[in-house]
Image (cartoon, rainbow, N blue to C red):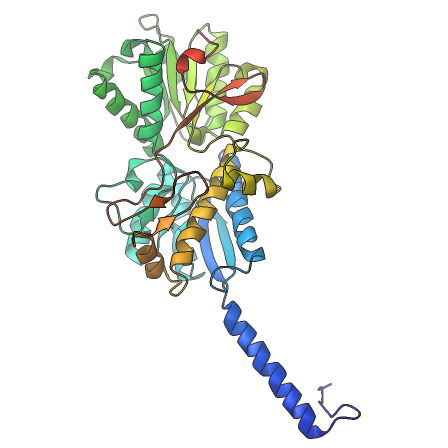
Length: 397
C-alpha cells in the first residue's frame, strides 16, 4: 500500500511542505558532510598455515579504523576494510588484488601478509595506480631505490632484522660467522631474509656464505627433516640458527633440533608470528628469540595507550596492524580534500609530518617511502616475551 503524506492536525499544507523541504535539505546536507564511505582493501591469509598473521593484521587495522569512525571519520568519510583470503598463496593474491581494485574500487590496499604474495601484488598496484601500504613483510621487493611510486612501508625490513641478529650474535655474544646456520622457507620470503643476513655478514668481513649450513623447506608444508639434516651434519656445529619461516615449520624444526641434541640459539624474524610460535612450542619455547618491528605493548607511548584501549588481545601482529591503520589514517588526513589513490600518494610524498604515536614524527618523500627501520629483539622466558638490548643478556648458551 502506498504511503500518502497529508497535513498533520493543526498544521496547514503550506507548513507541512515547508517542514518536509527543510527536513530533506538538512538530510542532504548531512549526507554531504559525512561523504561516502572509503573502501580500503586487503588480500591476506585468513585461512591456512599463516592465518594467524592475516587474521591478526585484519583485526589490528579494523580496530584502528573503528576508532577513526567513532570520531567522525576523516574529512567526513568513514573507513571500511574489505579483506579477501589468499591463504598466503600468490595464485590467489593476484586475482584478489585485481578484484579489490576493479570491483570494490578501493582507494588503497593495506596490510597484505607475505613476500610471495607481494611479488605478484606490486606489479598490479603499479599498473592500476593504487597504493600498497604497510604490507606485513620486510622483503626488498617493496623497498626499491628509488621506491615504487605506489608502494609504502611502515615496518622495518628483513635486512634490518637480520642485520640486528648478525650484529648481536657476532658483536655482543662474540660468535664467529662460521658458528651460524640457516633455516629458511624455499621461496621469495626465505630468499629475502637470507640475502639480508648475507649482506650483514659481508659488512662484518665474511664473504663465504656457501660455507654455512643452510636448510630449506617448501612453503605451506611441515617438511623440515631434510633441512634439519643439513644442520646436523657432523662437519658443522652451528651455535645459532637464523630462521626465516612460518611458525608451524619453525616450531617443528626447533623441537626436532633440540631432541637431536642441537645446542643453539634459535633466532626468528618477526614474520614467524610470535604468539603462534610460542603457543606451538609450549614449554620448548624457552630461550627462543624473535626480532620484532613494533615495541612491546606495555611501553609508555601514545599509540600503545590507544592499542590497550582497543579491546584487542595483546600481540605483536595485531599491534602492527593497529599501527599500520594509524599510519594510513595520518596520511589520509593530509589528502582529505582529495581522498583518491593519487591524492593519497601526493599527501604521503608532500613532506608533511606524520605522527604514529611512537615517538618522533616521520616524514616521507618521493625518495623515502618507509616509516620505520627500528628493530626490537625479544626472547621467550617463562612463557612471556621480554625485550632486551644486549644479546649477552640471553639466558642460553
